Image 1: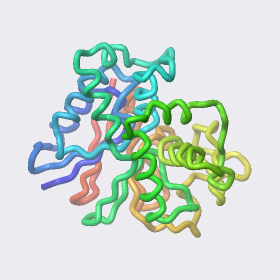
Image 2 (image 1 turned 90 degrees about the vertical axis):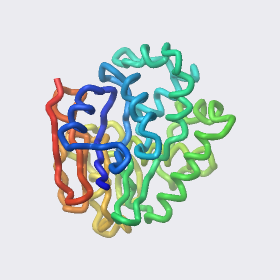
Image 3 (image 1 turned 180 degrees about the horizontal axis):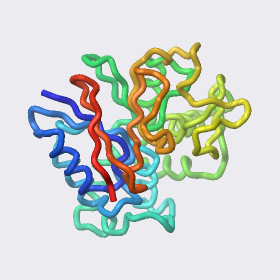
Image 4 (image 1 turned 45 degrees about the horizontal axis):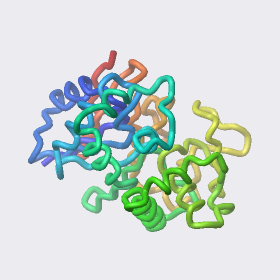
Length: 268
């Protein structure tokens, strides 16, 4: 059995199938992991979700910011944005079933056999792996609860919480957890976020979330997506950045956990 991990698909269904054919992926003996942002901006989010859902236990996918945005749009909590490409999915006869499947995906996946952790954006330097897993589980529970729409309304309220230090309520802590796991690029040593900067050069006082040597997570093996501007380039061998900009016309990349080899296909 082989495990293949892909980055941000974002509805680019044809490149996904091309990539899986190229690596020889076989559902059953093989497993597919997806590092979040399964949908949106690309041309075929509907086929993408249908395919991933069809893989059942052979697919492990974590939620990204675009996936959570879809949940909010489907629940009429957010309006679709100008560049969204979610209409076909939202109008599909199995839309409700697909949204429910998406809502029950994890926010973090840790694999003991490979000693590796997958998240969409990253893990802040203030957390241990144990803490990250605990906070992720709490956020998953909120999204999977019967009253999840109430939580989504709170999550997308305009009130800003910018660090765990200032998150004084349960809801604020969950909101901060979502920001860390699905939106983070730059932060400071105390976990304060800079969410405006989407490039590669940090603003004064901030650094990439993985660039803190004193962090408990510094030596952990971590797979993440979200940060297309990195173009898959990370400073350490234990970090694997898999958003290589497929939706922007660059490529879609798979990491094989057998030997940590990378395979890519062009996206157009």
